[in-house]
Image 1 (cartoon, rainbow, N blue to C red):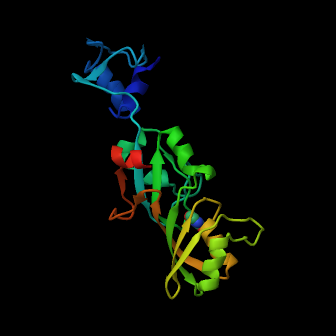
Image 2: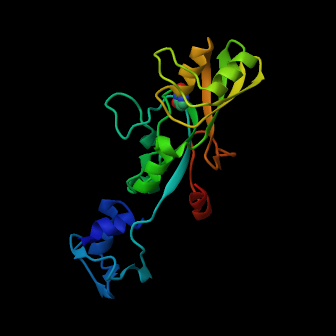
Length: 230
Ligand code: URA
């Protein structure tokens, strides 16, 4: 059993205050009968809830992709910094979305959010080794010895051992890096372990997903097919 207002929010009918008004106005029915008490408990598996006659499905699994700009911390709240949650458009704010993993404040690019706990766990679990592809601009030039060191599994300056990773030099001071784990400041620390300082970092891919042409600061919902491929 769950509260009618929560069910309506999870169905995407609106924010808590919006759905309260909808219910008050008699536009919501439970098993065909208008229900004006939004605190009423319903059983979503056994009862049919409709808004203006359209049956609602309850909690939808939602996954959205953000092209994160620099300057936002990956956290659901922060007393001082701007958080990535502030970049979600209002229609996504009441869906209980959580960031999948973390990008540093200065890092840009692909960041997922979901309200599906299992999917969240699968994507951030070290065991799943989901590949993540980054573009980096850095001081210093990556050479064959750096590539080989990444391939073998780098030891960071604090002794942390990384899984084998792919370093692809793209040009002077530019590289593509593919890692299968998500340690704190991982790419910056891997490059530092090889004497290179990262000045700009962007995540371009995560698993089967690419940033594509999503503009910086914008959000889009993944399709069911994209979610299934994850
Ligand atoms: N590696 C980093 O160093 N920073 C990020 O934000 C992501 C990966």
